[in-house]
Image (tube, rainbow, N blue to C red):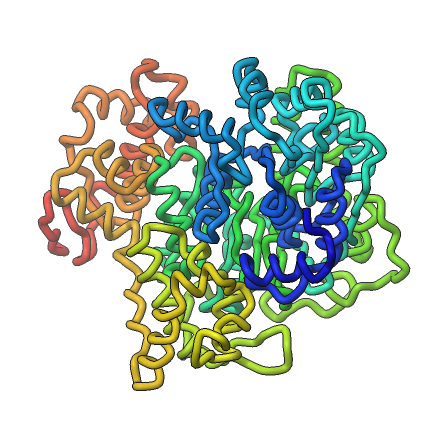
Amino acid sequence: MLTDSTALLDTLRRYWGYEGFRPLQERIVRSVIGNRDVVAVMPTGGGKSLCYQLPALLSERTAVVISPLIALMQDQVAQLTQMGIPSAFLNSAIPLAQQPEILKRAERGDFRLIYLSPERLARADTVSWLQRVPVAFFAIDEAHCISEWGHEFRPEYRLLSSLRENFPGRPIAAFTASATQRVRHDILAQLRLHEPHKYIMSFHRPNLRYLVKPCEGDKVQMQFLMAALRAHADENVIVYAPTIARVEETADDLRNLGIAAVPYHGQMNAETRKRNQEIWMSDEVRVLVGTIAFGLGINKSGVRAVIHLSLPKSVEQFYQEAGRAGRDGLPADCAMLWQKKDTALLAYFIGQIQDQAEQQRAWQRYHEIKGFAESKVCRHRLICRHFGETPKWSQCGMCDVCAAPPEWFRGKPADLLVPKAAKRAAVPTSGSETLNPELLEYLRAWRREISRRDNVPAFIVLHDRTLEDLCRKQPRNRSELLQVEGIGERKAELYGQEILEAFQQFGEGARAPQQEEARESPMEETIRLLKEGRSFQEIADIRQRRLNTILDTVADLIEKRRIEFDERWIAADRIRQIEEAAARLGIDRAKPIKEALPDDIAYGEIRIVLSRIRSGRNAERPDHTVSASGRTSEAS
């Protein structure tokens, strides 16, 4: 296997299109090539995957990668295949009829990398099959999941401890972005790593501005969210919400206010979830609102803000999710807009944990993140110390404690209206120059078109950093194209001529088509579907929302007199029972009414009937009130 620097750099340029390694990458690659056990702690966006992909490419055997997510496996295999590196994955997404062929090809050594889930590796038949595969080494991604002290502990990862027993001669390389000293020691013990080479990068992310603000109520929190989105208009933002209901509610609220946003959570069907992720990744929509299910393996460098709408469950979770901002090295905001009630919710869930040891660990994480949120000490310093790193500095100049916070973070924003983004300004880069915004947008539009044509994610076509370097260098021929970061020989072969033609067309006056205005707001869409006679369940299916979310929207529309209550929605006897209970118990809270009614009367029905009562059934309605059948009510 080639190990000299010239050979490594030649391979790096040819396949990945990079002129040099990032910090620690070459040393880790050399350790893996040298058949040493390795543990590497590198920040999100630090280039962990290359540390096992490049050695696998240079090997004559097969690297087995243990990865926790199907989508992550699929994306990496698609990327490697496009680069000309034979790879495969085995998981439930592969039809059973196709799996025997992959197994046979792996035994023949046809793949340089094969991706498995920890659950798959735990199966006896998988171990037996792997013993017939020419395995070079094992790479374990998200290795903190193996530790009970890790914030994302997964019991199935514990079974990886059998790797040393079943494959005694094969090296193991463990990678993670967020492991405390205690978790790192547990990784070494569980995997039984033998005199491993340890690589731990600094946990200090100096380009990230940590901002923490307690908010008094949802309304104030929403005001600060809107202020942040105004400050980052036309830039990529991730908003993390604590529950599926809050994700849907926030995404709908933003769209109602004219901000194009898409939701992402585990209860959406896979097709919609994948589509929402892709339109955000390709810059069609700038704001994604997600649960913690979103983000693992997301390869987008230009995220300018990550905003949490609740207290995360641990410092590690906050660090990991905040680290999805500013992966291009440019400044980015990482804001935690939390409320006192978040502590009660976290405490409630901790109380549900049956295992006493795990509950104790959860309480420790709770006190650590609460202490972080309430502290008046430099936030970068707190995070570094949490992970066992002692900075030599006492102030970072990049958090709300050490420096003046941005304007949007101060005071109480009074205005929720968001003006349309002005004409795109010049895009800053990590150097001193700026990029032509029209050219960058034209290349993004070209990438979206190629992505749809080839049915691959936009970042697999070209990475954000590659688009920016294209704008910077504006190549005129294949030789100059190969000098662009992220364009190796394979990428130039696939897209080179089309990229050069895109530059020619831009020079002749072509420009990116105007992005479509945000589609009709969720309220408008719900009103339209009601007018079409759709049932609540049909609307939920069409809008890819939970039924309760639709019922809440309808109740809100009735209460605001945007639509009329339709007697056909709920059986007359049920309406009567709800109204009688409301007359006795009041209309402020639905819970006492629910407890007084038969079990088969749902909360959604109660909310809608209460909204009719609150709206003033016999009150004069404004001109814009629309009945469910589409008739406009005239003011009397």
